[in-house]
Amino acid sequence: MAQEVRGVIAPGKDEPVRIETIVVPDPGPGEAVVAVQACGVCHTDLHYKQGGISDDYPFLLGHEAAGVVESVGAGVTDVAPGDFVILNWRAVCGKCRACLRGRPWYCFDTHNAEQKMTLASTGQELSPALGIGAFAEKTLVAAGQCTKVDPAVAPQVAGLLGCGVMAGIGAAINTGNVGRGDTVAVIGCGGVGDAAIAGSHLAGAAKVIAVDIDDRKLETARSMGATHTVNSRETDPVEAIRELTGGFGADVVIEAVGRPETYRQAFYARDLAGTVVLVGVPTPEMKLELPLLDVFGRGGSLKSSWYGDCLPSRDFPMLIDLHLQGRLDLDKFVTETIRLDEVEAAFDRMHAGDVLRSVVVL
Ligand code: APR
Ligand code: ZN
Ligand code: ZN
Image (cartoon, rainbow, N blue to C red):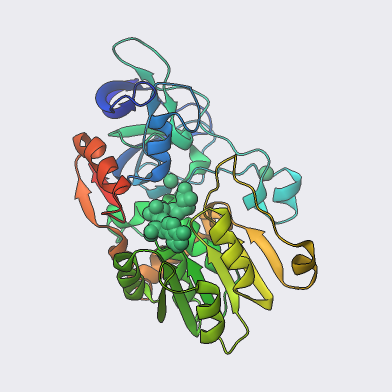
């Protein structure tokens, strides 16, 4: 039986979000219905609301979530009702060239639930943010979007791995391949950059240099494991990073802003054989100009990291276990827990840079 629950809808471009009754169908083949317990507020939700991602209104917002599987459709074997899961927005196919070559994070054929959730009042189909739509009491997803983790973790912490925090940690440990003794610089210390700092610390980096233009952010970055901080409004970050690394530059520089000027800093702040990881998301009009000779004259690698190059089935349970063992403090990322009807206000606080993460708890 389809069921009616409450969910947060973005009704149209730049219109305030509101709570509506939504209809969640029973799971079809390969699908699951999840009772959402927590869902973080991410910049991408705001971008959906503002029209920066698509015009497919109305959106059912929320995509950084954890909850309990309520029911599954035919053929679902990896998860069962009662499982505590983190939702991911890239359920990989397992069959495409990328998957078969062992790089499923580049999968060409990720999928979401085939059935649609609808608005109870009008019957209109909803577009779930990133194929999830978890600012709702229940949501319908593809079973492959559910990854079982240790239920001992608090849901508001588990949900973080569904997007921004996974992107940052993965940029360090998966894409950047940060290892013991490495020097790392992270440019931009919001939620993603802080997670990259925590990931670098976890991986055993010898130095983790945090760069931001805001001293408040640098203070938080220290609590995440940064060993040095640079305010790039006051100090040239390239020179500062070189100085802190014996004149060489960092082994791994993670750009977590998504702008040409900070990318340029990352490019020049790395060791000759170092790696630059771009995890900040640029906008379409941004351009980068670099002397080609400077690209030629350096080895190493220039990489981008999408969703932290994560493999949810591998990374989510591992990171939750490390958190539960006290080796990765994810609690620090949750600034506040809020109710479903407080999402609009949380967008304002996020925009003002006042919170790392507001998490809706249901
Ligand atoms: N130099 C250094 N830091 C900067 C600069 C700059 N020129 N401009 C902004 N910052 C800092 C901000 O002060 C803030 O601390 O970058 C940080 C960005 O953080 P958030 O806005 O909280 O963004 P976050 O959620 O961390 O995401 C970072 O990744 O997922 C993408 O779209 C997201 O592009 C964004 C990036
Ligand atoms: Zn694939
Ligand atoms: Zn997100």
